[in-house]
Length: 182
Length: 182
DNA sequence: ACTTGAAACGAGAACCATTCTCATCTAGGG
DNA sequence: CCCTAGATGAGAATGGTTCTCGTTTCAAGT
Image (tube, helix red, strand yellow):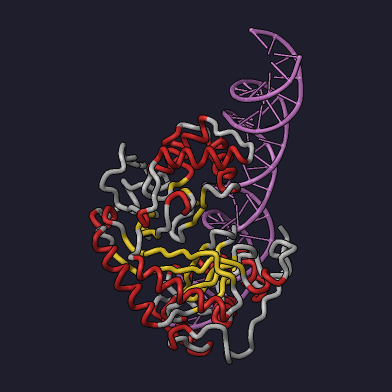
């Protein structure tokens, strides 16, 4: 229950794993968007909040609270509070991995672009990926139809690919060892 | 934090919301399959365990621990232990709804058939649904391709339609009131 | 610059779904 | 009938997350 972590935050966004729908904003653009949204609500965009947003903006995957705490050096309670506020304003999205006991957080889709996740059943890591637009379109259509039959109002969908990540495949001995979890 | 619940367990499986891929087994078949699988592992198929399986088999949706406790009249710790055992043996699957703080449980896909969920962001309820097979096939193909590029080994996928269920749409005043949660 | 009220912060307590413990009960084989 | 491994259930313990509250920071008005 005490996994080491080794999160690599790329210094630039070149050649990244995911470029969600081509609508992914860069870190500066994200800061601007967040600042504006908070400004409208008279919520200060403080240093701590900036650092949390920066970490989320650079990560190519949803992060756990502890990962964020480590990367921002902010106290636990501040990280939780910051995430709660950002979530309430709709700038951050909380998600859970069935195979991990920790919640993970990522920026909202309108900042990051619509995407899905490769969810490792071993270490709990989630990596952003995007589907071809035509598949996505077919899917949306099918889901809309299905939902309508059940009188269900669709807001969006969540699609995770469950399996084993490259790291855990290479090193199958330990459970989630030397991999980022927690 | 104290939602009433009103779970309706249909007495028969006629005309149900979901008939997963046509491969859904009926309650008796499920009991048989579970009994065999447990027997192979020298795990007794006791009364409590049967009742939990029966409840899960009849529900057309993943259930929370408290729902199961209510419907089986079994003590909390027994429900948790039973679910843990069944999960370990691969007969039960645990899943989490980003919008609910409670884990939900359903029978494994080889008993229930492959399916997805309508996940209500308001009350947390999840309802089983199935996609047209051609959509499912296209999706599988796209996901396999994607995963391969990332050296990710695919075990399956999870697709939730997020939105508002019919009940919560009709009665938008209270938060998840008169609906099944917990 | 100085005051002031509102917002933000941080450390620790509290919460609560879930897991663990352990004493007791039960079923099936010899 | 006895024996023992497995099962049960009540309550304690765990731990991620939330809440509390005294302190600090910020921005606006003076």
